[in-house]
Image (cartoon, rainbow, N blue to C red):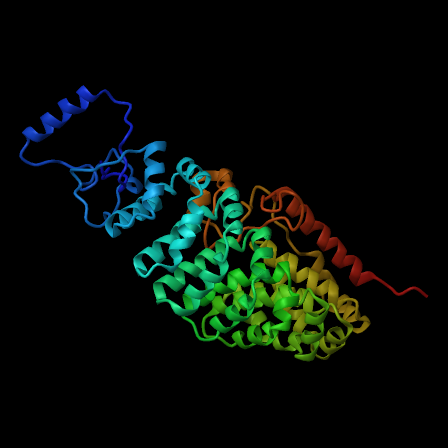
Length: 440
């Protein structure tokens, strides 16, 4: 049977007594108008359980399969059915079933990933797009990422879609790449594919803004894992050209990618060669919050070399004034942390340290740090956090930057108390750097 509420062809196993179902069907057929719970607003049902569009070529009053393990096995087999209609219905059903974690885990055990990977070369664009969406959901599970890493030519096929296919499919394939790049094992497998970093760098030059933004987020994770390959592919120059983009989101993500490159010694040399510290000064006064955050984070790495510190001495008054202004932003703890780190790096230069001690030491002592009661762990106050309280930290809030630990087994977990303690320690470290005197 086709279940209209779940938008899937599954109803093989049912715990309800058949006589009760027959009686309900007879009573429903006695009415002239059949009230479908998914086709009409039902105040007692969940909005997310009512699909907005149905699968193609279906009759919502009839269906042939059921929800259950047996039905999932049959749908998994129908993915390679010679009948195009059955295959398309099976793909729509799998896309709906992977939204349920239990069914997604069962489909992963059935090796549905290998079947879906073979469908990436299908001629039908609807099938290619749906397969990318399904793989994105399955990549959210650890077991799913392990199975995806074992699939031959998966990343090559996805990159081919990103390069040659239509816009909607390029977007879906890029989102699959972004989900996979969050795992270090997947990053290792992606970096081993020939020319994949080079192709990504070509894409971000002449692609739509939304797709470029997704690829930049993927490249940030890939550059963090291995900055050598992108540095050899001239990724530094490509990211530098993106700094002049009209979209502030692309500028911010390009700076985050550049930060990963500047962690390497070659990246630091290139930063000195292109004089990034001077180049980033106008971005400190930008009106876009994301650009300022990324610019200060990049300066944490560009101000580590001696050449950059002596170069910054030429504009010490302007640079330190802007940085001190950003330090006094208790509503943005991550910005405070990055700004104080830049000032600590600059204080290694004796002239800048003398200038900061003479003009800004009293301002540093007045830096306010929020308490754990005033801060919920994110950079912005959202309705999600206000409605669910502190439990929302276990959820994914898209578009809001969440402060995370930099290292450890629980790097993805927010710990407000330890982070605020880190802020206080960073402030003390800055005061110590200002008062530091060379050994004589």
